[in-house]
Each structure stands twice: as structure tokens, then as C-alpha cells.
Image 1: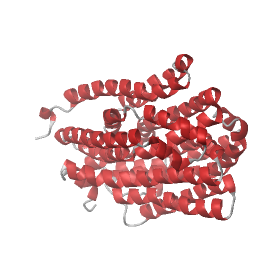
Image 2: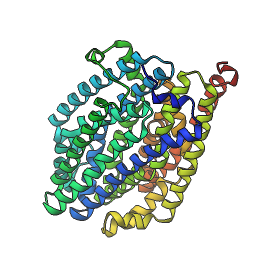
Image 3: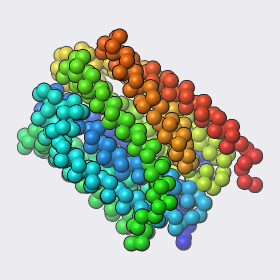
Image 4: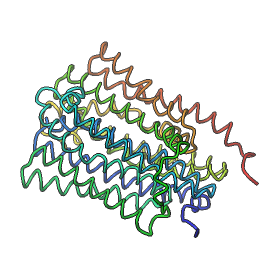
Length: 452
């Protein structure tokens, strides 16, 4: 086998590698987030504020199914990165084939199930009153394209594991740009309303899938799998599942959070509060793109060097990633503290929504400067194949702290209790993650463990 570019992960400087990996990942996340952001703006201005709430109801369901692809992708990519680092190329190929089979089997099954209980699911996730019908329309159409999105998410992680972040970036940009163009045509020109927004999203998923398929069939990819690689191997499936479950559990908790938030806010403030949360949620997806980009760039570097037993490089990668992510998170914090009302006005002209959202946005992002430790810490354990601590640290913020807080604090502080739950859970989760990450570094990544 010829020398592969993934070997650069073990030789180039950490700073250069992290920038090389993180910048394309950040750009890809930025474009994807801008797509969600602009899509919401288009829907809010061309259809109405209720349509924003309707999409927010559907997102946790479609994202959870798509997150299966992301989970399988990240779980398998951790194996692939370490396999490439330790020169086990056949294991990398077998892992990729198993990822494809698992993604298809699971997502198609869940889509069939999701379409069988449309009314119940939409209602359970907060699609009530005037929100129900547009949410049902959007949900039904988008769900058809979710398996394609899952395959794209899975493939994107594998592309990064190969050390080709620019191609991963292109894969994220294609559906975003396509969706915005189709939004304009289907909503503004053809006046298809919510159905137009849904079809624009679904068709854009198809375009992304076509690109990812081209990448792996072309000479760009190092992973040239055969039919035999598609057969499920118990040990590989178990390892993909244990590591991928971390990502899946995180998205499952996000979906549960949406369920609670939409219902709690609807009871406290009606459709206006749900819309305010939808806008803040879009900013959570958009504003954090540089920090998430660093986290995505960190994963293959840490995994490869851990597989190569180069622990000094792993320590350096952790420290550099946290520093970069913290600086970027602080920049995000400053912007959102200064301009929350201007940001809100981009989404809607509804007076009540504009009145309520800025305060909520400030509370939600109040602890943003410190979250780098939590994100990089949880990602580290996933990168090195330690599924249990990765799972527990991933669930710490939303599962162990945030959900209990939003169930308790609103009883005493009303709607304010919902918003202050965000920074409290961020602080607590960061403290817990910092403790376990520091302990792991002192035990596992000692200098004397480096190979001579």
C-alpha cells in the first residue's frame, strides 16, 4: 500500500495540524449553521413566526435519526484513526464497511417507525395549537431525506479520519448552499410554504449524499472497501456501538431536552416563548461553530497519535485545542452579550418575540467562555476509545444537570428558571470534566509512557 496522507497526523506540528483540521471543519459547520440560520430567517419572514416554532418541534426527531449516522461515523472513525496510526489498514476498511451497513439498517427502520406515528410524535414534541399543522407538513417531508443525511454525517467523519478535512468541509457546504437556493425558489418564488421549506431541505440532503458517494468511489479516498467488508463483524460492531453511543446518547438527550423545553415554555409563555427558544437554539448551532470546529479537528489528531502511542503529542493536542477553543468561545460570548436584540430582529418582526428573546439569549450563553474544557475533555475520551467516561462526560451537562434543573427551577422562578438552567449546567459540567480529564492525563499520558 502506498503511503497515505493520514500519516501526517503523527508527524506535522500540533498547531499546524489543528489549524489544518479545525479550519475546514469550522467553515463546514459555519456554512451548515448559516444554512439553518438563514433558513429560519426565510421561514420567519416569508411564512411567519409560527413556522419557526414548527421547525423547532421537528428538529429533535429528524436530528436524532440523522445522529445515528453521526454516531456510527464518529464511533467508527475513532477506530479508523487508531487503526491507521497503528498500521492496521484491513481493520480500518472493515470498520468502514460495517459503518455503512449499520447506518442503512438503523436509519431506514427508524424512518418507517417515525412515519407510522406522525401525529403522536409531533404533538409530543410540542407541536400544539397553531404549530401542529405546519410542523406535521415539515416533519413528513423531511423524514424521507433523513437516511441520506445520516449517510452524509457518517461519511463526513470518516473523511476527516483519513486526514482530508477540506473534502469533509465541502460535504457540509453542499447541502447548505443548495438548501438556501431551493428555499428561495420553493418558498419565495413558487410560494409552497412549509412544504417548500421541507423539500428544499430534503433535496439538499440528496445532493450531499451524491458528493460523499463520489468521494469514496474516486481516487480521493484511501478506504477502498470490497463487498466482504459490508458483512457485520461482532467485535467491530460492538466497538462502533460503544463509542458511537456516546454521540447518539448526546443527541438523544438533546431531543429529550427539546421535548421538555418546548412543552415547558409553551405552558409558561405560549407560542411566543417557544419561538424565542427556537431563535436561541439556532444561535447555539450557529455561534459555536469555531469551537465545534476545533473539537472536530481535535478528534483525528488525538486518536491517531494515541494509536501510535505518541503520548507527548496527545498531551500537546489537548492543551492546544483547549486554548484555541477557549479564545474562540470568549469571542462568541462578547458578541452575543453586546448584540442580542439586533440578532433577534434578523429572525422576526414579532414585537413580543423581540422583547423576550434578548434576555433569554444572554442567560443561555452566559458561561460560554469556559465550555472548551467540557467539549474537548469529553471528545478526548471518545477519540482514544474509552466509551464509558466519554459517555458519562457527554451526558453530564444536559442529562445530569440541565434536564433536572429545567424541571425544578421553573417551579420557583417561572420562565427565568428555564434560562438560568443553561449557565448553571455549563459551570457544573465543566468542573466535573476538568477533574476527570486532569486525572486521566496524569495517569495515562505520563512522559515516561512515550515509546523510545
